[in-house]
Image (cartoon, each protein chain N blue to C red):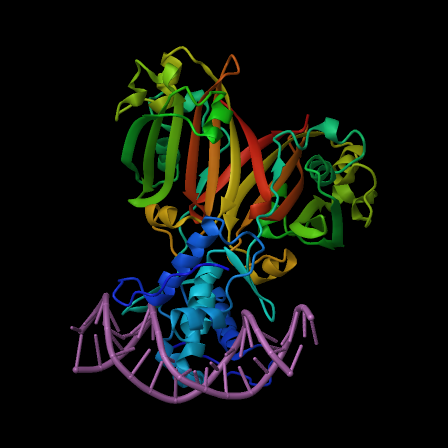
Length: 259
Length: 259
DNA sequence: GAGTGGTCTAGACCACACA
DNA sequence: GTGTGGTCTAGACCACTCT
């Protein structure tokens, strides 16, 4: 059983912070292990002689720090750290496509997790100004939009939406649910657009409520947004892929020239 | 004056969420502009006919989403969006060092913000295992550690800690407070280590309380961690720079090969 | 002093998980 | 059914900001 102190009413920290600090340090010191259950609100009320709202506020503090998750009817538990997937800077190299696998599948298998994809949606739309800018299109052009969600060991870790100029996608399997071996990039190359390089724009923020739901994110879990644009050997942008990743699950690697 | 609806007790969303949703959409639609004051708790209590704790919970929801900031004695205000600095993939190219400026200074000036540096600390330490791994050193080696904080228009946006093998730094200005024109990288090249490339490891997470203080971060503002390792033309790692950036202030750009 | 958010109390009823 | 967290009420006193 966890050993707890008492609230010092003369301390300049309010009681709820003192309680939060005690629980936090218990977590940091490993006296409360990942997955372990915290004392219940009733326990805290009784032990610290505070009202329930004060005990709840202490718990709320830890939730907002992302240290614990509350589960109604079960209790509050120390959050387990997600396994990190390292995305190497050569992850889109052609040699990884040769055997017909998509980038996510390869990366996942390398990390020893079971990859899967669901919530695939395909449509044809008019590009937003964000996409127009990156694909050098106008509002009168059409793009094929492919949205999907990636899971690692059945845990959602990333959503991705690809935009391909309809002119390139038409007549290929890009607009089909199953794009065939090697994924979108293989089909784009089949269509005569040999890929030359990609740019990625990386930022981080808190998720929207919808993203939080799609990725089943706990409180205080940020997301990484990675917008990738693919260019063919003529310098033409041929695809934009807008991805939202659960931040704790990823580490991105890049290489930069010094020249 | 902001137009507000009412809580629907038969709605399946609890009242505090309905109130939060109304305020959030007012913010999203621009009816509450950045910097503008939200209705006070007393206003909400009166308008929606709920208790103060319920009104507070609605506000708390928006705070945890990072949409608003509460200021005691003043009110709750829509958070202003920070100007974004875009870091280009050629930001460490040698041509940017030629005129004797450090990377941060160049980037900042390009973005039209006034750059500054403070909290410079220099020391000599034994490398952590994290640093040992990246610089290929052992615990018995020494590294020169340079910590500093970068500000844009006097707002702290980034902390950085560089680790340079003492063997390379000794006898140069790297261990001085002022490293001279071109910064650390120019001194490393002076010492005969011509820079070839860098790797960056990018991740995002919530800040520690100390980072939150250093970067003056509001609630629910994530940070980007970028760990950069510099390699010379012989393939030897010559510096590791561990940076923590206020996420809303940055957009990182990278280029990836397709081959 | 008036208005604001910060903290706290002592209750209440509900929804959910588990045995 | 018992224990858990989720939500709510109707008060209270405090610290801070602004006029």
